[in-house]
Image (cartoon, rainbow, N blue to C red; front, side, top):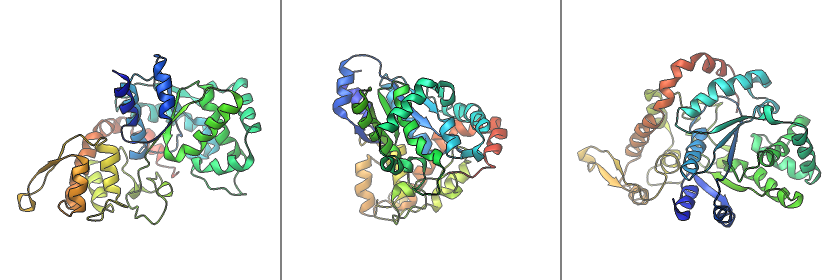
Length: 345
């Protein structure tokens, strides 16, 4: 695989931002295996928002990158996930998260945060804290899904510094996350200059909005949520549940703005502008149509494709993509029921 092909895999949707392309080219010129990491809180059932980042990791794996999935058990504990029960968080990470990631065919190294945190790590956290300001760290609390508040536990302040320290502790070339993690990645890049640490590439993927997103709130505040069943497609949803949720999702005709179904189509299903796909329609509505995403966009905006047709296509593709998780669900029903006792963001 040549350099241009590797770069295209990095930039392929759902990538929304790469900081920076020049830095990536420098690393590729070294002709060595690049090391990636993405961290996940253990907080509830997996949904499309989570799987989107994993599919991006599969692109990087195809590009020859070493994939590392960081199970952020201490971070989940600080953020009071699963009732703030650290042992339960670890159990869910090992018995639920890892098997359901693996069922989608991603080959990765799994690293439990609590197993690598040593004196060197905590010293690094303090060094990063000494080089940052309280106001900047507080602004980064949005990475936790939390707003700045005087009533937040003091432990919340440590969270962004820990996430930055994770990047350096793991000695990675690529820090990967959703766009909602951008602030802490920029903090890590800035601090790498000050402390003369290895500067990472930051790869940010698109955030899928909630199925009921209507544009009245910022998309980062209206993303798919584990705490609202009807806002998300969960990987365990049955075929009927997927069809029902998509059928009820907001999808204005002749508009791609504030259109969650189109967002799933563009950022989760059809991840480039060259792939030709088929929208199936009754003959009285024009019959089946084959087209690329840019062609679809033009036809939809012109009113030549109805929201129902897009919803039908998206539903069936999601049913196909999520089949490995549905097949595994019955074997993991006990741990899933344990998770369902907690409603966490």
